[in-house]
Length: 152
Image (tube, rainbow, N blue to C red; front, top):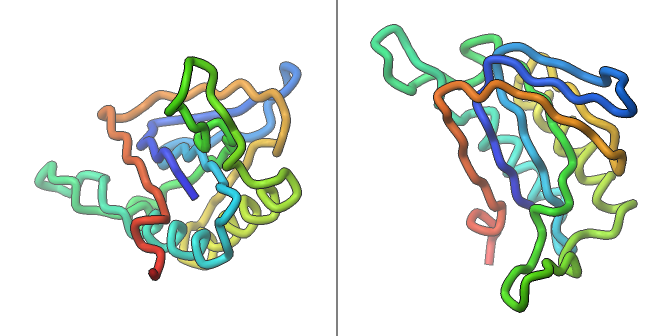
């Protein structure tokens, strides 16, 4: 499971010119589900995300997690994060999870964020053509891949 986590001042997602979700201070997360991902991957990634300390404390150091600043999360399913670009110029998405399983793990990841104390988790619409608008704060962008924490 791969995630691009951006610290934002605000973020929103629209589908067919209709606002679907919006947040203020927090994270906008693009989540890619791979074909071999499991519940454990979602649990690890949610736990690491909820405890990621990239918000500034009173001394200006990135020392606070999202719960410490009453932050919100906008999570967007993004299968293109699973692209294989080793050969040629056209990405292959063969390693992306099948849609039904990808959606199940995306929803489970969002539930796990709540289980880890995040107070507000908003979502896009799985499989829709979404327009995402955000104001990256910093900018701060962190890349996570659950494979690095997966037990061998």
